[in-house]
Image (cartoon, rainbow, N blue to C red; front, side, top):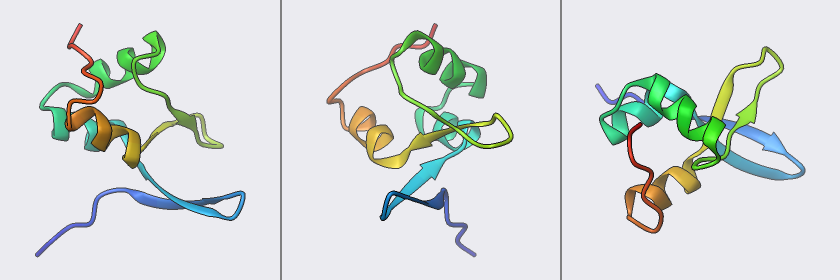
Length: 74
């Protein structure tokens, strides 16, 4: 059974796939706290939900995975 990662959020007529810190961490094989530190340091941008949780743009995460930008674990 395949699990679909990410959520679709409609913002200004654009459907954009967003990932949770855990989903991003699995892709980079790091701890979710490392992903949060990347966001705090500006290495990765995040969007805050109404509840204050961070979400990350899948397109930006894919670009990082492809080596266009390379955040290093802290």
